Structures are given as C-alpha cells and as structure tokens.
Image (cartoon, rainbow, N blue to C red; front, side, top):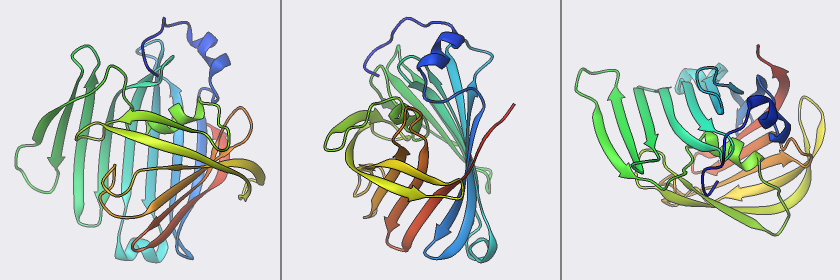
Length: 244
C-alpha cells in the first residue's frame, strides 16, 4: 500500500490474494424493509496489463423503489498488485434524473488525479479537474479489495488515502467486533468494520457505514449497512460464483 513492490506473475499473486480470478459476489439490497435492488462485484486479471486487476461493481433498483428512484450504476476500477494501488475508476451513473459518465485517472509518477465528469443529459463540455494524490491511492471500489488484503483484529484500526474526484482524503477504518451474519448463502462468522466516510470525509451528509467481512482468509464482504437520513440501506450476500 505505501509503495511499489516488484511485480510478479499473476499465478504467484493468486496465492497471496484473498480472491481468485473471476470471483463474483451478488447481493440483495433493502431500503428499510423494502426490496430495493440487486448488486454484484466481479474481479479478474486485466489481460492487457500483467500485474493489474479489474474490478466491476453493478447495481440496479427493483420493485417499488425503482418506481420512485431508478438506479442503474456501473463502476470499473483497475488496480495493481502488489500494493492494490488504483490506476483509476470509470463510473456510469444513472440515478433518478441524473445520468453522468465520470472518468478518474491516477498518474502515480506525476502524483496527479485527472477527473472528467460529463453530464449525459445535456451537451455541455465535461468538467475537467486535477488533484494531488500520493504515489499510491485508492478509489472507492479498489478500497474494498485493498481492505480484504489486510489482517483484521478487533480493537485495531487502519487508514489509507482515497480519491473520489476531489481532494484526497485519509479514510480511517475501525475494526469493531466479531459477529455472526445470516445471508442467503448461509451463516458466516464475520468481522464488523466501520469506515469513517460521512460528515464531509467522503459523503457530505451525516450517517454511519458498517461492513462485515468473513473471518477467514478470503475476507468476503458479506454485508454492508449504511445508516443515512432517509433510512437504513442494507446489502446482503446472496450468491458466490465465478465469471469466466
């Protein structure tokens, strides 16, 4: 995380990583007690660049929630291993009346992030900005996989730099408790962590976020819960698979 190491073969990396090529995690999402959506995380080696991985996150709303606030999002992140340093993230966002295409690229040598944010509903030029970054930085998707690479001990904490198209911030994560989480896949012994992402750190509003990772070496994120002003949103693991 805090510097570049020598790259090795993808096969050697697979031994160290808590996930394998093509890992696919599916989730059901609830808002309060209502079914709200479906989400998935997929990670695989980037065949065009040895030592680099590509992660994709997709989410779409369902049912009643989709009638009042339609969501159709897709994020793609690329990160290097070892180190899990992000190369950038591409977001295709359709939420309510918003439709945006956002590209965020990281240049570790120049220590700069370049943001290109385009509103797809009008024909104005995209907003283009640059921000300072450290040599190794996370985006909001690569951060999940970086966290999975770390040992988690209750009572301890860890930090990492993250950039989401603005000033780089330091995310503090508390490792809080061991708990049993029930999912559609089964019951898991899990470690609950709380990243400090609200109150202006990453999101402007007030709230709390909790993530449960399995206690084993894979550290699979089996549940995420966000407590925000409009109610609690919970994503719970529904399937573990593999995408070819």
